[in-house]
Image (tube, rainbow, N blue to C red; front, side, top):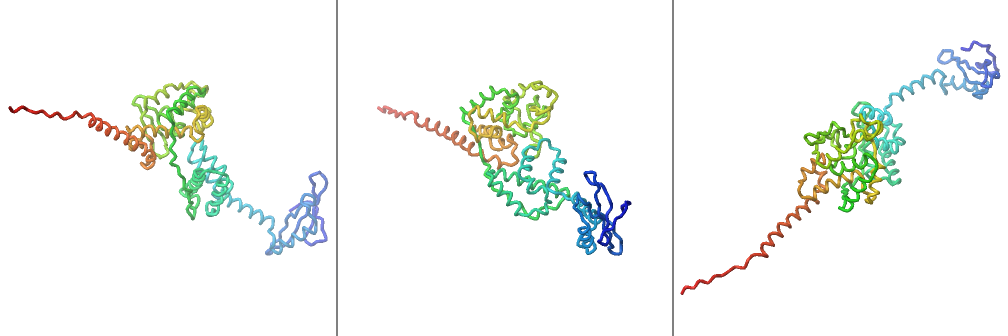
Length: 392
């Protein structure tokens, strides 16, 4: 309750006291008094200049409060406090995403971070999973399609949204979606290959490129078939030079794998000097990023090499080399599909089947070689000699 002199107005229950305005000049501050449920309530109505308050407006405000058409200042503050408390307890998609990243403790989420920022934050960030309806998903999908985004990009974005919500559900932070997110059908059976001439130009471009890591990363993808993320996560402790193996930690399939360290890959690794880059001598990573931490991107550097080699624009500079590695092994006819699956660390044999036709062609050629040998023997078969014995 104000302690300054109260000045009455012609309106019952409305008075003002003198205060100071923002310009230092005197300003009237209006108050109202009324009873509600037998309790006397006295509260500020507003300031003369800052709130454009007048005795008449204060009187209308008093009447509304008495009739229950408006909340008292105390009730409004209490309502706001409850609203903020409820807001703090809401597990929106934004909050779930931050918690997901915190608990996963993954450095450089990279593509997922970009997908969330570009496609998920605006339509879903402030919503709780229970507030999302199928129409919201359809609108986002249509918007991405109109923007020319590939079906695979849309699928990966929807998968990320589903993963975030599943995480929240598993941790009892939110309720699951009451519907299933329909994923677009994607033909991801693209198998990239290089001709001998293209491969030769690529190796030449790698040799001429000045970047200390880009070319070596591309060679490792070509010689081992390792994925981009696996190469970025590769540490020196994961390489067993003595027994000739590379341990792949946290691969796409989820279970750690081991692949052979062939001679070509060994030469690449042995050519890497840990003192090549100043300030990174103590990094545990084979291909460290900034400040010796885990690398998150090398897009521009490897694409520069790809362009210099004159490779097709749609050839993926790193993942495409994984396909080249697999295609070379399959077409050689010397590697069965089970072995190829293990070398590629595919989770299921179905994922390796895209290369089956290459092995089939190699087997056909081998079969034709056998036929040619047999035909050659038949063609050069010596004529039968008939001897006539004189019986006389």
